[in-house]
Image (cartoon, rainbow, N blue to C red):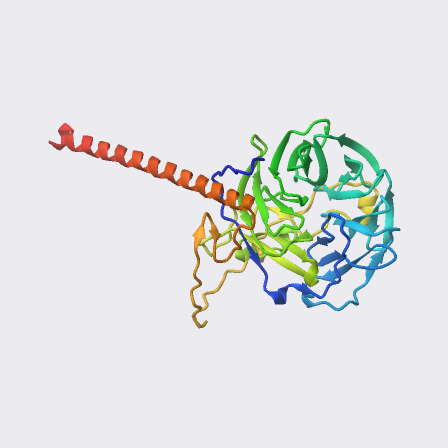
Length: 425
């Protein structure tokens, strides 16, 4: 996609990111120093799983989400691979099933009820770069260092679809909800960062290929099926771009960008039923900051003036009840997620009548970005992108003013005609 984004009207146009206070972060965690380009982190409604630094093979740490603050190194680790663990993914709505991949080129499917792997997938010829489950957990897609994109039946290990594209070197992949499509990020033949959209049942050619920018860090894609929002976060970047996905062309529309001075090593994502709907939170990242041994929650919030529950941004969503038990899923049964409403978790914010007045914070907002809150552009490319975003916003506002001027002239003419009509004489 062009780095000069096109704006469109959307209720998610002004979504902004909010970093959690330090006491709500996870501190003192020995995050792996492995340089493999992956998240090293996975989140469900109860636990946070992090790949840790260890000798003699791969391991990861599982921490209860309520255990924030300084983490003591006494939580159990899970070991099974012959090499370092590179990625872990919870099967989204199947109880206690998790997939892990390693430098040994294998994928292990774990049943945490028994604490051991129940299936090994060994169809890859090189190191696995990324994994993603589909909505009902019946499919697993992977990208590999052998430059192939695969769609796999995880219980049998059978490869259903396979793609090998020279024009788009695939690095990361994610299923797009129930759209039966995949989105990949990678590198074009000109070494620019690029995304591609695929039909999951036909990987012969991508539906679209769009360039993002010329930076070097790999792009991590995250998709929210409820809002149809796509988030792109670069390895080592401090920013997170977000877009809106549609089923028709142009398929992808740029919305806005969150900025932070701290680079991200990896990012985990909270399921929708774990969000704070009272704060209009629609997405939450868990950002790994290796140098500080810190995991930092970042909430993406839709600004709303009303105190009521916002049904338009919270449709029925997969809930906390698993669709299947591990034994049912391993036996070959498929079932859609059990949906729930998030309204029960809504708590109307009370007016703090007796709270001491808070000094109003000064801000300078340009194009939805607080210049006193966000870091300034660090490179010429960032400065150019901000400049063109502002130019597009100015152009849009001028067009709105021109339309209003036309409407005013039309109303003035109608009023004049009414005054001059015979009935008013």
